[in-house]
Length: 254
Image 1 (cartoon, helix red, strand yellow):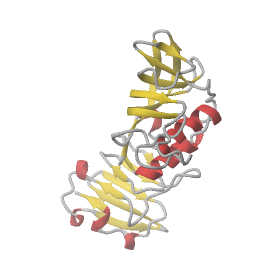
Image 2 (image 1 turned 30 degrees about the vertical axis):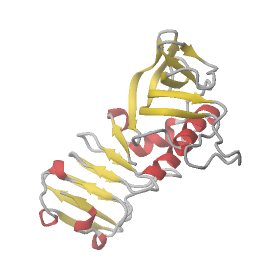
Image 3 (image 1 turned 135 degrees about the vertical axis):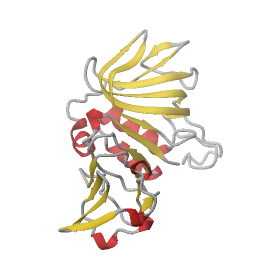
Image 4 (image 1 turned 120 degrees about the vertical axis):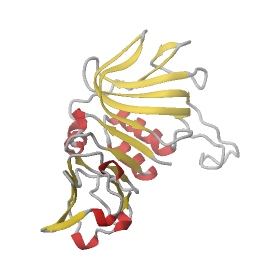
């Protein structure tokens, strides 16, 4: 029940990337693609298997999901109570199946040959299993409102593993329990726009195994005003809004 977020050079300042991503993104209400039906803009109820869904304007920003899924237009209300919340029930307009990746990028295209992005800026591997209601809500927000807010709701519900680049990154987390994988460089973790959070002491974790640190005693922690720095060799992370006295071995994976 955890999503993995893979940063690229384009999203290494994750705070700015997420804050500005929806600017310039305009939905086309989405399209599905599968080998047998081809490109479908009005999917029939559960009749076809799709491996791609995407939304965006040609040549501009877009969002694409990949996997093996169907689109359930009517839903399945097994006991007829109308709430679609009981085990085995599927709400209307939900994806059914599996999703392997959700990608934000540029150079969106959709045609009879498929749906793609020429540049992948941020790749999210969703939690395993069927798409959840929160994931479906994220797709709905992209499709109807050209909004990234549903993605924040989804990441809050499952938690995220946020993988930095090898450079110095500006990272942010979400409302759930997150793990920041720090591979090197001098990173910063802080809050961005609504729906994002800095390092949450007692909930989030810093994975510094790629630094080579073997124990908390290998690290140097010191205060910088109301923030704290953690150092090991040439690597560091600035935890905005976290007092140095609150940083402990429990915050790390070694």
